[in-house]
Image (tube, rainbow, N blue to C red; front, top):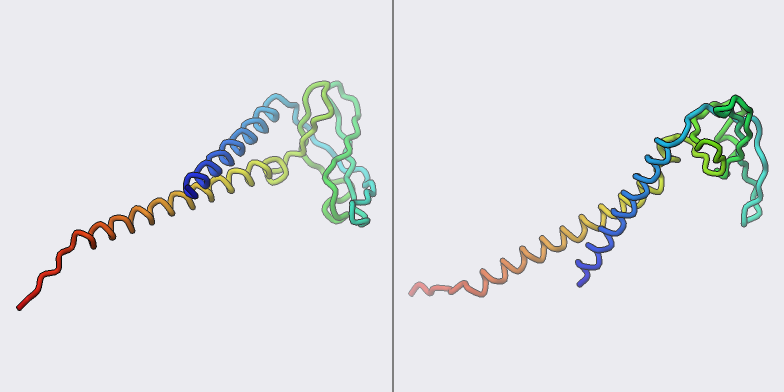
Length: 150
C-alpha cells in the first residue's frame, strides 16, 4: 500500500513539474524578450519585521516606450546592484506577467516538483524491487529440503 501511495505521489509531482515547465516555456516563447536595468530598490518589511529590498527595473517595450517594473523578488540589497542588466520577458501589452529570465528564477518551481517526483518514483521502485527480492528468497527457502548425510 505504501509503495502505491509513493508511486502515485511521485507520478503526480512529476506531472505537475512537467506541466509547470511546459507552461513557463510556452509563456517565454510567446513573450518579447528585452533587457532590463536595475534603477533603484524599494524597502519592504516582511512578516518578521525585517527589511528586504525589491529591485525596480526599467526596460524599453516594443513601442520604444520606457517602462518601470517592480519585481516581487525581495531579498538582500547585495543580491542586485544599480545598473545591473537582466533579460526579462513580457507579453505584448500585458505587463502584469513579466518574468526575469535566469535559469534558477525561471524554473525553480519546475525543478522542485520534478526532483520530488523522481525521488518518490525511485523510492517506490527500490522498495518494490527489495520486496520482490525477499519474496524470491523466502520462496527458495520454503522449497529447500535439507538432505541428511548419514
